[in-house]
Length: 78
Image 1: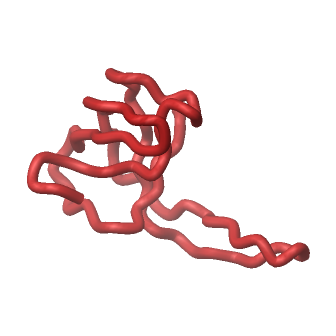
Image 2: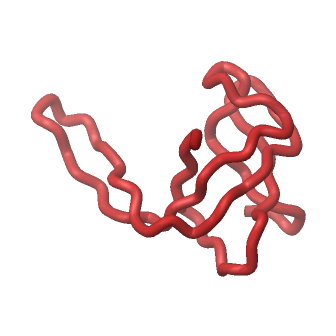
Image 3: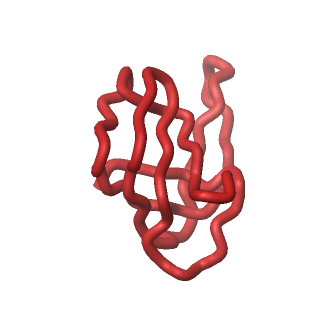
């Protein structure tokens, strides 16, 4: 998180573009698969974020709501 919004650890290479609206979920839980990979199971839907800037591997976004956003929340394409 920054003073002006959120940093998302996905960007152009993941198909995110400026003005994209993403769903925001709280942390939920992390489970480990058979092959040792960790998977994040999103928690409760918190609201939406709007992407304001995109780099290859990260994006900046602003939260469109009034809930408290915490590091580790999960975004998903609607």
